[in-house]
Image 1 (tube, helix red, strand yellow):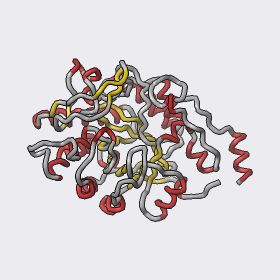
Image 2 (tube, one colour):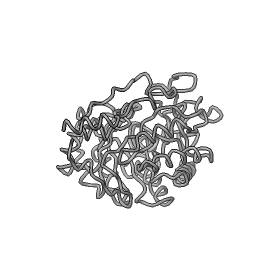
Image 3 (tube, one colour):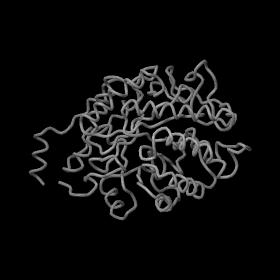
Length: 370
């Protein structure tokens, strides 16, 4: 039996978490074509409510923001009703859950857009890679550069999604500003080639993401809004020529907004933690609030960094797929189930809600061994 403050309750502002483990947003592509969630998602999230906090799979704030088939939305009454069943199930198990607000920007395809229109982005820069459509993978296209006059419309989409998330019973929202999607595209010069007030200098590139954050906070409040960033990840063919000063300035600005937490992907998303030089401690020092570390963490590493004051919450992804009772397994020292990568994305119940949890007999055996 592990005795560590990772397993102790934690106050995330006004929200009491049962422990410091956070289930990362994990795209599973099991929503309907219209972005609705149902019985499968209710059971999936209910099973994992032992996490101190769940951050939902990335959820489209609008059709325009959709970049992958069978991903959920939060822009219709049907979406709200479906997610309300999910949040009710998580709360019935004593859990907490935030909704991740998602607009993919250029990481899309006309097949996923209303009327077959081009995806939108800060600039008309084509990303390498393929989009997952209902007809399979198709190459990304060159997006349409957004006019400055259109940005208030996108901000309104974030506001509507935030209000819908609140109506659906979520405990808060996480603004997705990572992994090469729309807000990250505005931040990083690999995708932002604008020459207006939203491009060029760091201050200009931060402008639209911060406008979104401010609008989301106004639609709820700062204590119920977190944000996710990924300073060096190359996900979705995005990079920046000098990420350290960019993200230090961004985090300083975010700190001024007194958000619920800063969620940082340290290293390459889903890959190495330290193959690219970056000073994450500098971000921690610049954020006056809760720091959530993500990427390659196990309980030992998280415990070490917690004791050293380098994080407050630890966000874990793929182990939660195969281990609905992950926190319990880590606490009692039980082995982890192995995930079936063939069922990570799309499909039905298999590889989604059929991973076994420990039985009472298992728990008694591990407690006795301890």
